[in-house]
Length: 177
Image (cartoon, rainbow, N blue to C red; front, side):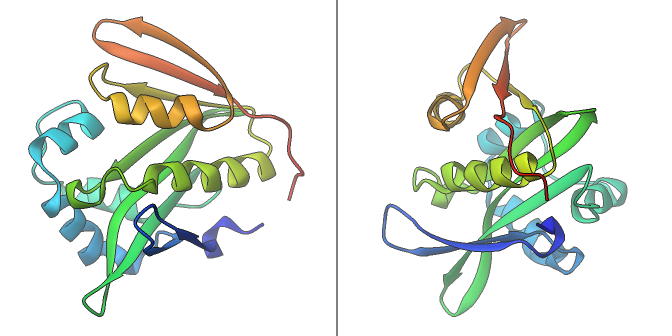
């Protein structure tokens, strides 16, 4: 499986068709627009700090992924004849066999199951790449994200420390691509 060309279609709880695909450098304007639609609270939950803008270096980091050690998927909906990035998820390999997960869904599209679909696709890509576990840090008040992890079908362990929930998800062995 070549994650750089990844694309899939899912159906959301509200019946809308969601495209899940590899994030591309050409998604820059739409990714920044999605960030602009996110509330302060949503951005705080993702970055653990007040965040309204990104440096050029941060934008490059988020957009230019190698799809080996850094995989990023975009969640795209068709609204008003436009393709809108409404969320995304990524993993970054932090040590052999282990990658850190991160998600962001814009406020208007939360609670539709987008993060649940995104994690399923990241699990498939990670298993094919031979990864053994995902780790994530989640704010304790981010109950929706913790629920996504609890319900994703992977063995879950959590550890609370200094206002952060450390999540570890064990990936079962998969067919190596």
